[in-house]
Length: 80
Image 1 (cartoon, rainbow, N blue to C red):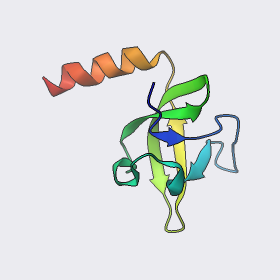
Image 2 (cartoon, rainbow, N blue to C red):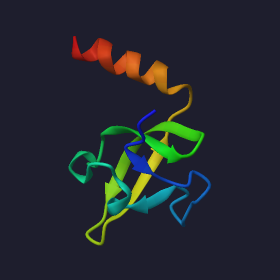
Image 3 (cartoon, rainbow, N blue to C red):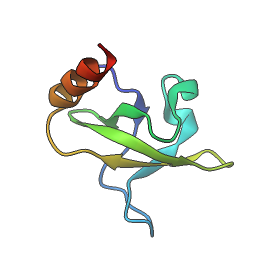
Image 4 (cartoon, rainbow, N blue to C red):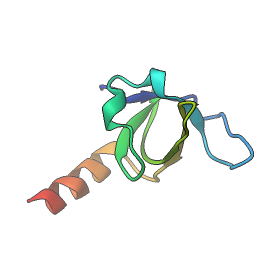
């Protein structure tokens, strides 16, 4: 499975959200607030919403409950 943004899902800062830096993205241009991306590292992956991208490249994400396939199917049905 292609990971869009490498994030250690166990990291949280004062926001209570996992974070990483923009340079950890396979394509930084898709990392925009509101976008759903596949995030994680190794076998720990999830679909997550990009919450914010700071000027210094710090990115916060909100992992979504459920499987990645469920979220992909829902996104596909909205695009049709």
